[in-house]
Each structure stands twice: as structure tokens, then as C-alpha cells.
Image (cartoon, rainbow, N blue to C red; front, side):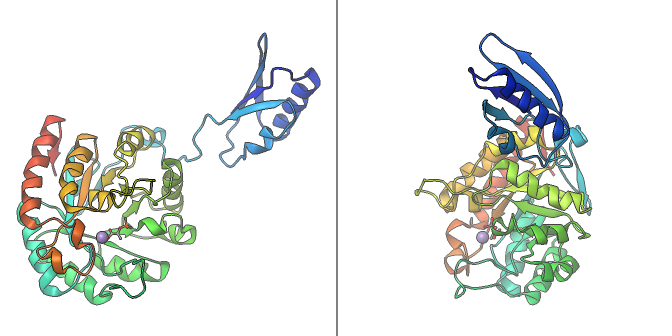
Length: 338
Ligand code: PEP
Ligand code: MN
């Protein structure tokens, strides 16, 4: 932590700040300039609230210099994490494509879509059986029946399953059917839930909260990691901004930022990120180009009649073209399609 004193701070004020820093367990290095004194406070205190120092008379500014997350930090595993999920590696050279409908609607629907996305080269089948909807009157998902349809469709086409788990009580059930447990944007800071996911036996795909900073997102990952589950995949799915032309603002810049700050793999979800079908493809291309370890794309064979998110779901033919483009983009940046 760097503590900058005000230009007119008195010697006794400086000494008082130093004394308080020592009391909090910091080692203090002082440098006295012509106009201002700067204190370097050294110590590992990830939970320290620097506002306590900001309030001391004579202090102008306080800057934290270490990140508050440890297990999620790049320094924890310099080479980057690679998770082998039943033979599909995430975080490696291969770009992993996850695709499927927003929600599992019927056995026939999920089978039709699974066949199409598998043929185009997707490795994961997505689809919610438990849906977090803004309205309680909207389709809430098929529950366990949906999980059964999803697993069977995935198995029939050699796909892995990623699906949402909405609360602690569902973890053991969803774990029986899924290869990866998805935590939705609305749950990113449900800390009791995250702690429970730390004990889960399956990897977790942690979506970024709609109003979460990158640091808050990584702190949420830290909850799962510190709970004992080392397999966390981050998912950028768009954040809320002042923009109204799109459903969300897909923060493509988060991808290289996460790559620098963390060793965890990052997947991008341009479907929720922009929310409008004709713009999903260009954003998916951009995310791969920006270094994402994969993309998650909503695909529906009959989006006009989808029970949720039809307007942002690609037609299978569009998805097929996108896969070919992803192949080219991956190649251009020294990667391949997983
Ligand atoms: C979803 O993937 O269908 C979903 C509800 O995502 P999010 O939590 O990002 O809104
Ligand atoms: Mn959706």
C-alpha cells in the first residue's frame, strides 16, 4: 500500500500515520520529497480496509498495490490453468465451443439442437433446466426432467454438458447430470452458494455479474477456489452500462485483462453479452480474437418459438458458418478449435 501525505502535512502527522501502520502490522518505508512524504506500507493484509488510513489527518491518498485475491491470481499458476473435462481441455491451445438453446424445452428440441451443434463442431451442449427469469410468470425450466433430456442428448452426440445451478439445494442434483456447473450472473455474489460450490465435485463456470468489476468477479472465483474446488472457468457475459441499443455491453476488454490478472480460463458469452441475433456472430469473432479460451453460443432451430432468448439465438446454419470463422480466427492467433 502506498500512502501519500498532503503537501502541508506536519512531522507529527507523518509520525502518527507511521505509528498506525505499524499497529496494523505493516512494515513502513518512508521517502521524504521536497513537497510531499510518501510511505510504502509492506505487509500481506488482503482484507485491510485502506479507508482507515485515508481518514487520518494529513493523508492525501492511499493506493493498494497488491490484489486482494490470491488463488485466482496469475502469480498462483503462471503457466495458466488447463482443466481436462472428460477429454475436452479448457484453457489449453484449443478454443472450446459450447452451444445450445437458452433453455431445455423438450426432449425433441434438445436432441435436434444437439445434433446440429455437434455436427458443426461444438464440444459442449448448453441449456438451462433451471432458469433464472426476471418474471416469475415466465418459463422457469423443466427441472430434473430437463437435466435428463440434456444429458441424454449430449451423450447421443458425444458432447459435454454445461447447465445452470441456481442455488445450494440444487447442487447435488445438477452434479449428477452436468460436466460443468454454471453459476448465473445474478448469483455471482451469492457468497453462501459460492462457498458450497467450493465443495462441489464438478468444475464451475462462473458468469460475471451484471454490475461486477473484474476484481469483484475474481473475488467470487476466490470463494470457490478457497472452498476447495480448483476448477473455476470465468465467463464474460456482458455488463449493464448506460447503453440501450444492446441488451448488455459485452466487455471484450475483460478478456485480455483477465488473462493478465488470472490463471483461470475465460469463456465469452456473446449471446447474452449483446442480446441481438445479428450481432452475436461479430462479437463471437471478436472474443476469440481477443484471446478467449472459448465461446458459449445460444442456438435454436426454431428461435421464433423458443421459450426464452429466441431473439439472441443463432439458427443452426448461422452457427455452422460461425464455427468455420472461429477456426480461421483461432488459426490466425496460433490456436485451434478444441
Ligand atoms: C443463461 O446462460 O441462459 C443465463 C441465464 O445467463 P446469465 O446468467 O449470464 O444471464
Ligand atoms: Mn439465455
